[in-house]
Length: 281
Ligand code: F3S
Image 1 (cartoon, protein in one colour):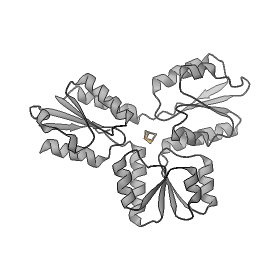
Image 2 (tube, helix red, strand yellow):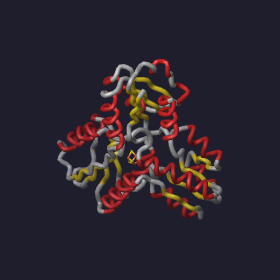
Image 3 (cartoon, helix red, strand yellow):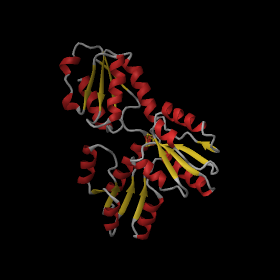
Image 4 (cartoon, helix red, strand yellow):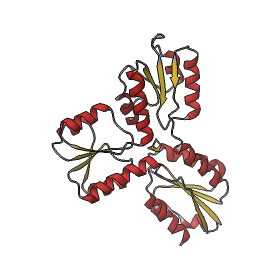
């Protein structure tokens, strides 16, 4: 059996960087040490970090109760007030915000300081959007559907700056901007979508089209893994979804020549390598 692993399988650059940062700090012996929110939506990783002394703060209230130690900001980023609170409390801050998210913070900070109101195209409940809102000095609107774009009634006399959540779908972003175009607002549009997700999907589609069987690895609640599975299934009937190497059924793969492997955004490299090794042995 031959195996082809997608280069873009698993963590994107920003998440890998954030996870590495936490491990580095923990291994340096920094204590007490906290991440503001789970560093990644993967219980295995969060548990492993807990054993190494890394605690997760799940809310602002929990952060307020911390008296000493180091707070690590995850790749999603946070609003200005969180940095201020960390500073006021005399805590150390290690910032692992993805540079692509940081760029959005800078844009909305600058444009709102110049008087523009901000439109964020994305999911209002997502922590990344929460963080972006926290850098807006003027009013910030969050829209994610055509209805919300139609219903938006920002003042026509105030200029606008439109940005996007990094993981938003590009086609949908374009559609929503078109709706806003019809309203003739004075605006600038900055496409801040990160193409890590799209690259992962494109590569998965391409590999699934070449192989005899395809394995998609990811968490059971991961919507991006589900999406990867659908994409691969469309190209390759023998597509299997697994969470870890324990779910791998080598019997069904035995008669296949070339097997492809990809993984969702929260799948650690270690799990991908274990699956690859098992297929090869
Ligand atoms: Fe990942 Fe950063 Fe893009 S966290 S999805 S590389 S914006």
